[in-house]
Image 1 (tube, helix red, strand yellow):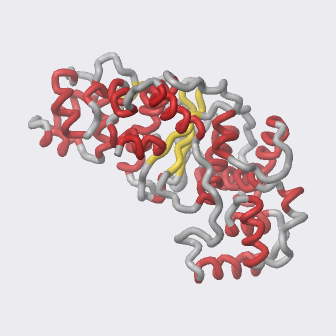
Image 2 (image 1 turned 90 degrees about the horizontal axis):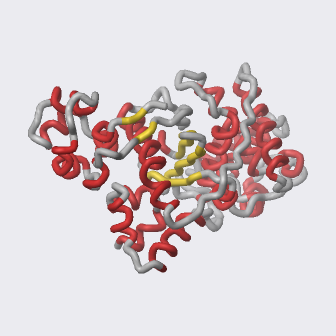
Image 3 (image 1 turned 60 degrees about the vertical axis):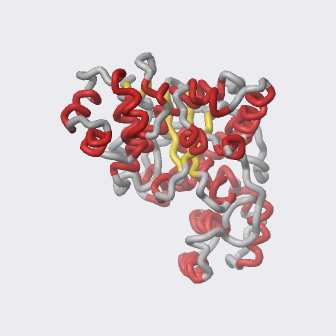
Length: 355
């Protein structure tokens, strides 16, 4: 498994080029390039690098190893995603495994991963991809024995199955969530700036679908079909069709959909897409529903009808255990190479503690 260079990772997190980093540490671009290629010892410049990138000084320890994920980092619109956003995703992926997970693991025992590998034959079109993803979701529900009704708390469920969950704090639409495997460990990242709890649940299940179906995903795979599979997986996992169809309205009426949103804790838009994928409503009804959603502004802001957000139980227990030992969350994170800013990005439960 390949490794990431800490200077390149820190630069990616800071969102600066090699030339900009060189200016901040009073060196040349070629000097920075040589450091990132491993031709130049970066440790003597650790303090300057820390100040330039906002990383903790201990991030640049010479014994620190940052592994590349063994699977592709899956997030939407990857081909259209700007390079700086991809670099930040690489940074978070490497830092989660090398820094954040060991930090939390010092205080909380993570469950053994129980994420089955359910590979799906490559579908030929978007519709087939959504249906194939739904079939994988059915298999996972059966394997986990969780029944066919609404899931009360998705994040609690996936954490109980050994997924190591962390967050980003990004305004970029490309980073609403992503997932990957590193050294046999499954990771999911969610964006803590996503306002709608129903959307967060869908994002979590979307990324779970990638972990289940795309463990050996190549970086140059057909992204549109892969994303459609994950969409179909998420909808089926949250609202199994054989159960949900008994409650779904014949016409996507907003009043009925709003009541189902409260029960199933899934967005009205996801429900309409789910119904359309299974042929329960016509293309005209589907199109008209989304025109209505756009007019009401639901495509850009949360739908009406608040639901309690799913939150990380592991993170809450981590903070509780640190404080119970009379320790400072900030200081123990610093020892692991995690600055206050990065800690707040990856573990939102620590934000109030840091204030």
